Length: 306
Image (cartoon, rainbow, N blue to C red; front, side, top):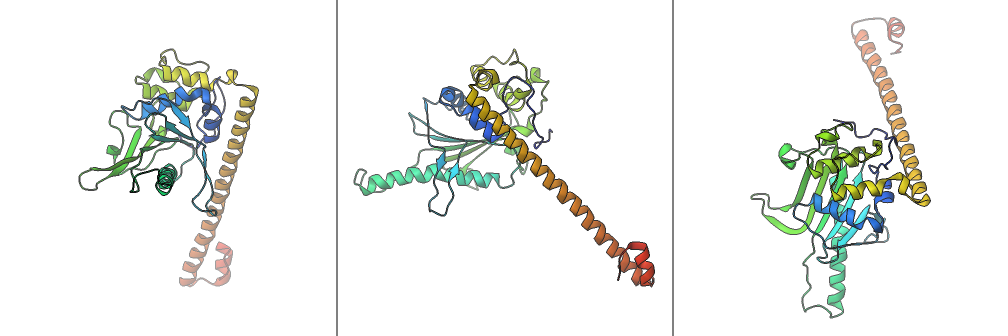
């Protein structure tokens, strides 16, 4: 399995969208509405959308002290009103599922606030309507989540885990209002030179998301509309000057963050080794003292003064 936190280098003709900053800069543009719609339809079997409306990605907290939340993508199907949050997460985060749960509360409470407003102004019926339009949270993860067993993953691909609000005893769905889809890309079995092993659209799509920044051209067998749109959207040569500058700035920032995190980890490791060595010498010194060795001899042997 590939190491998730490696620093990615630009090698091909396409952008890297594995960092959330670049994901936003490259894909979140009005001209990519069809692409995003097809991605959502791919990840939610049987889902067919009419047209997406993009909602302001910055959502305010419930109270003044609560910081605002910036989504990668927040959009709504114009026909059904179903809402979709799409997120990219490069580095492993132990509380990521809880974070996505908190994200899901924003569109839910917005729906309820709108209903409450209509109720208070007399536009709605005499009872407060608590029904909710479904909210889907779709996450692309460049790491693998921890599960009790492999049954948590889709049997046909082994890459996607899905969650809903269900009964503990028989799996009965409590509400259709909340769904989570995690694409665990670190579980993808093929390397960057193994595109010929990809058979399904999902495999081709995940391969592209992971490796297209290393490719000189779209693989010949990757002919589906979703893939054509994806490669067109990420081609560096077709970007405007402003888009290219924003992308390169984003990647520089991500590189700086990665290097800083690596430095902190290396220093912490060195400090841990030094602390461990010191504790080890102290333990040896105490043992030698218990055996009757003279303090001056212990000092010479271990460097520890008792």
